[in-house]
Image 1 (tube, rainbow over the protein chains, first blue to last red):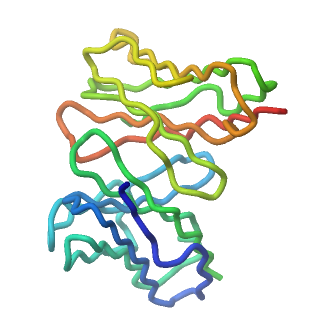
Image 2 (cartoon, rainbow over the protein chains, first blue to last red):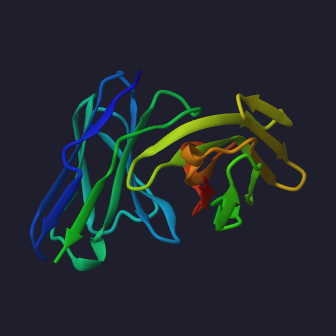
Length: 111
Length: 112
């Protein structure tokens, strides 16, 4: 079975802190994604990567950056956390356009 | 927006009843997928239907797709308390396979 893991289930940070969210998948998938999920807004794509060192902006990239140095690892970086970045962050990977495999999510609270 | 929109937003039924959720979208798709999310967890893929298919079954799940109306429905038959979760549709556009567009979900509550 495909496994996607995220470094933390819950995270509490202060405004202005730099935050790293890590995601690792074990199935050699080329494509990896970061979403945020907020009540009533569904999942919104922040960034995705289709290969090592490649990245593309999603629908809401402002305030975020990403890093993909190895195929299995995709990191989301909040350069200077703000309260409006309090959210559930979901990482996903996939090999084609048919199925996305999601991690368990990281619930981030920015105070 | 290309986002799929689910309807209803919330649904509460008794165990044993059927649950039907609908999804509408705006542009031509390659396929449409349904996902389930248990409270506070990640999404799990349930079923995929391609644009040239009209109906698909998987266990107690039945999905239909009407491309002329740009809509899909997910039917869960003989629901169980364990089916309580949020259900999302995701569309993959013909002209952009990179992005999946998720709706805001239907929250299903199955009462024992």
